[in-house]
Image (cartoon, rainbow, N blue to C red; front, side, top):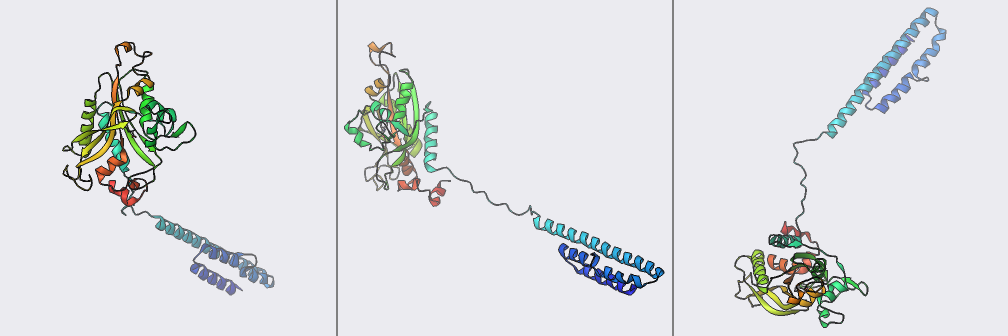
Length: 352
Ligand code: PHE
């Protein structure tokens, strides 16, 4: 019987040594130390022994149980430690590895052109004014000297929302709103960038949504010479110091006189090429002297606000408006306006 117990101890220790998982170890504990284990089985025969032998057998069985239990505890610690070490090894961070590259976006070419033009005009004392994309007919047309049914409304095919509201067709309503807010007192010197909408079929040079920048300077002695001077400086700033501009007579209901402004072709320098259609000139914007009706309708040069009114109108000024896409296309040699709005990364990446 004593032999049996010792053999059991050897056998159990061998198995404990070989077990590789905590759950396997737990199975061994149940197998050897549980109520139905082999040690209990052997001890059932105790009743056949003499009292002295019984005492010795009890002692040995306790020793065997303790040995096995100690072996299990030691193994458990070993397995747990191994587990922790394995986990630590798996989770170590190699700080010497190169980091993942963060991809930084770039500025959209239209925003870059707007920021550049804003910078230029802020340096000349202009402030930035903004309006809303949904505009009242009253501000988009009527106060700009385009009464209902005026044929010139056809120049700007519009998206109407209801009888009185539309998506603004130009940034000019901002100049009217700013003039109105000034209550007949100049100077007003603003630059208005913004999104605009017209019912055009989209193609390489037309987009139903586009961007404009409007400029307005109204004061007591602003002349068309000032307009020409500032636009020439702008053209040189945008396209290079050798660029010249020319003014051609044109028509806008809200300016009188009105002009179309061309810049000498940046591609051929004025000799004629395919970009300027052999003319040597590229059209970049529309402008003119603010129409007296526009000034009057927005509260300038009227008896209510102007105590010197009887001596004649005091305020006059110029306005100009340009398409941001057109400027960006000329500046960067982009041949299709749709590139600005289709978010092709191959296009956008070139402007980083
Ligand atoms: N608002 C005009 C347009 O969109 C441009 C313009 C602005 C012309 C200011 C003259 C003066 O066609």
